[in-house]
Image (cartoon, rainbow, N blue to C red; front, side, top):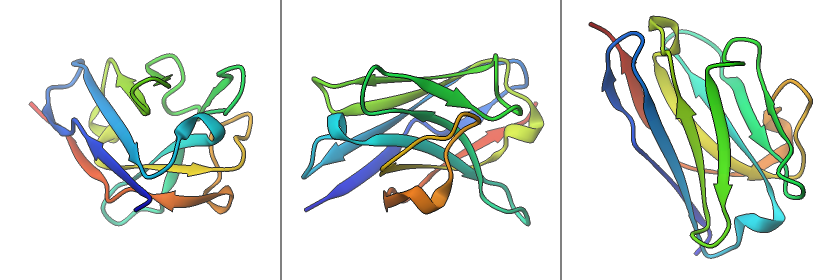
Amino acid sequence: QVQLVESGGGLVQPGGSLRLSCAASGFSLYYYAVGWFRQAPGKEREGVSCIRSNYNITSYSDSVKGRFTISRDNALNIVYLQMNSVKAGDTAVYYCAAGAACNSDGPLARYFGTWGQGTSVTVSS
């Protein structure tokens, strides 16, 4: 069964850090671009970070550039999103997805076909 499962969400204080994980089963992430998206209440889904299938080239939206880092562990079949210096505006449900391509400023949902169920991140003091 092809599946993506996110984990690592929770409550974090402003300025703090959190690491999200996206674990794949039933297929290898090695061959796919992997994107992280988020959706805050009442807002549209936003692509925040992406890592390509080869050369590990990464891209980020302007809203997270310099604060978030995406990486992959091919041996474990996991992609991570390290979130540093978080802000209240980072509060959202975060989803990972596997797909075909990354844009230079982050992932576009139309290129991604396999999605996880999401993990909730709340930034609050």
